Image (cartoon, rainbow, N blue to C red):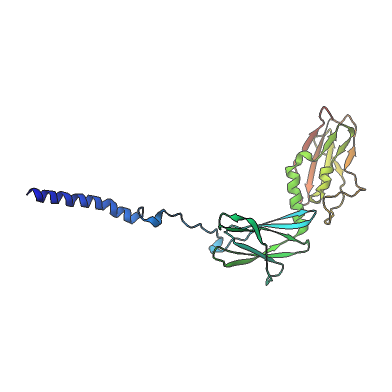
Length: 250
């Protein structure tokens, strides 16, 4: 009789232990595979379509360049000026891409001002080519966008007083990025700029340089205490009025 009770107790204990084990097997918490990190998900657009790249164009003394940014992991980037190719690789950087664990595809290319439309494709993690995506390149539009961004982030440099030239107000900075400006207005000791200041025409071949025969300053009364400036951009939008006060040393 004693042996029978021990057997019953052992059976009951086995049943109690089996319950959490069964639940654990169902939720996969004891499955070694369930502890592995999940594969990275691929960002897709509508109906699972690959996202086109975001492209930023930059202008420098060396010419134009385009920089591509992709939502998906990329193992190689190729581009062409024709839809049917031939496509040229952008090459690779001397660093690893943490998303692919392979050499990082170079995201930048140099292009000519007359490139027109650029076709870009990329290889995914499985080596499949995705694209090509058609990217319109409009140098004048891109230059205006780039120069406007510069003007908005450097608004404190639009006008400048000089302590060694108290009768001059400089707008050299605005002249350098005039390709984004339709009209420049300046006010002297006035909170509302009321004087239209002419700027040189935009030169797409050398947009930053100001022609030697063009003024980049105004002659002013040394008693002027402050100046204001306002820009009408090429798209017709109007900037805030910026105030520039003459400092004690000016």
